[in-house]
Image 1: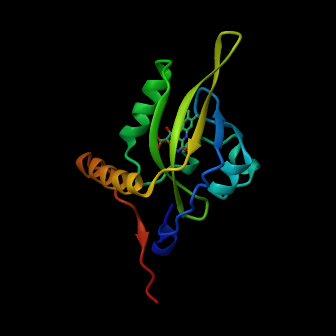
Image 2: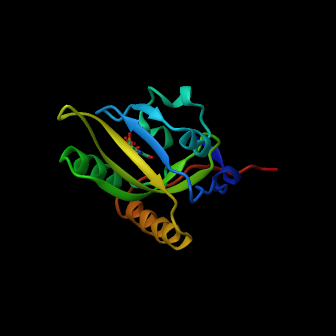
Length: 149
Ligand SMILES: Cc1cc2nc3c(=O)[nH]c(=O)nc-3n(C[C@H](O)[C@H](O)[C@H](O)COP(=O)(O)O)c2cc1C
């Protein structure tokens, strides 16, 4: 998908007092999204349920971050990290995500993610880090359409 440059610059700030919550099945398909997740990502609940969680993947995120996430949770450990996500309208938001397993009667049934706000300094640090990681890995840069008018 392509976005124009101005949309890329619009940040949605995650409020201090609210938690963004989602759950997925074991394949990463969204099974639950709370109201805050819908508001911050710009989607309706019905647009998120049943979709792969990469629906909010931002092209600035290096793939190795998600490889690490999946390896960690598949090893039954909790993963925590700073993630830049993309909104439905092409804007973005940063979160500190804590991803862990959901068990029922001792059986792994789902994964869940709780997300909280990130400080300005951490956003800046991670933007630079992720830009470098993508560059070092030869990953695609963001696609921006420059409008001629
Ligand atoms: C519970 C849970 C929450 C996740 N939350 C996000 C998220 O907020 N943003 C994101 O880009 N990927 C998230 N992922 C990882 C995605 O499943 C996916 O690995 C990632 O977006 C990379 O997608 P791709 O490898 O298909 O490009 C989450 C995974 C799980 C299990």
